[in-house]
Image 1: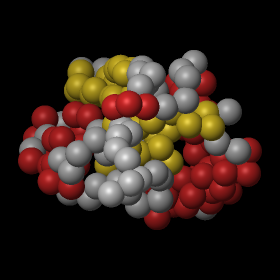
Image 2: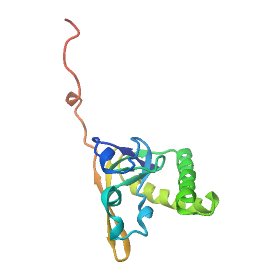
Image 3: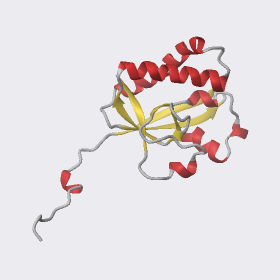
Image 4: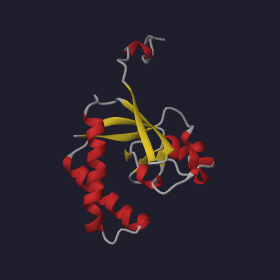
Length: 159
């Protein structure tokens, strides 16, 4: 099974999101955060989070790019509990037990999105408000085979 981890190509997320996600943390779309938003909510850094931010499951921060990676069943179960607790803490779910099926569904949707891509594929999300609610679209950026010469330092061990 696959999910996606936060990745940073530069430092821009540190400036564009009110709370940036930590590199390497597991992420999901997190579009549920915006389900009751209107145009009036889309200002400043909140607008950036809405427009293209993935939700980090550990920090609750946002990130622009995620990379597809393998997740163990144990990690998946732990993430389900983490997300269920998030729903209780921030969205008023009555209990972790009540929130767990919804959390599992959110993570299953993310796994479905990721399973069709090879490891290290970068994904982006784009959102827009419509009369029917929030519409999300996803874009992939395939990992390119890197030539080792691009990164290797050539030289001699002799002085």
